[in-house]
Image: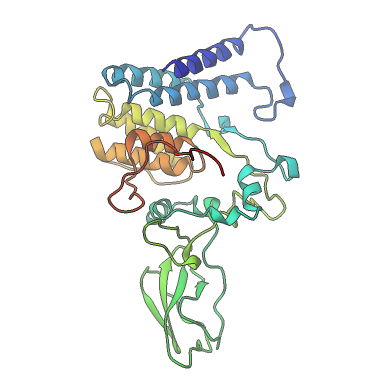
Length: 341
């Protein structure tokens, strides 16, 4: 707790020193994040104070309501709109490129791929952030009179993946004209001597317990975060502290399943505020445990590539993640080797 006390003290000091009437102009236009806007830095600091307060709840169950109340106060003074998000500065210059992009361009880059749990959550609700987070697992167009093999994948005109699930032997040629593709996941299409199955949106993740076919797993390369457009690869401004996080902190703090003295109606409002940023529809009529599950699941998606998802999972164990090797448990801390060889 001493570490968290020190962090809170340091953030409070920063807020005070950035306040009105304090001497010094600061970096002004040389500030690559907020352009010298002190009010935005103060809001980010308040959001961080709320974030770190949540880290202390599990160790202090007797004062949980008080901690949540303080987190609400800090979050209400936090980042009020997406325009105030704290984003890491990056450009296409080699020395300034996004760290995830830099890793993807190394020989180890393809070791990091999409996880099935996250992709499945996002596909189930047609989440508009899918192309920002992951590359497509199918991009080839259908070809006439083409010899296809079982497992081959294409992207149909509806934007869905189609996979060859059966072929005639020895002739596995497609037809002379493109079929009319269905829009329902799991529907099959007969294409001369080829049978296609609709696999839905062209994204997929790896499963540590049930290895997935390699051509169904999405990489990070090919996503809009890696290359917002062909001329700006590596320039994505990585979110560090955001309005969405602030809204989801408030949602958790007001949720009665987390804080019995909270208010589920207020919690749902803050959850829907966060969902509105990427364009998700508002939820209605959920309370209690179901509401808390929705809040933490949304935070799991929204804070993709942010270490805070790990901290949230350690506190809440939401969403449900199947441990590696059935019967074991998910670790509560990041393990490290006793020594390096």
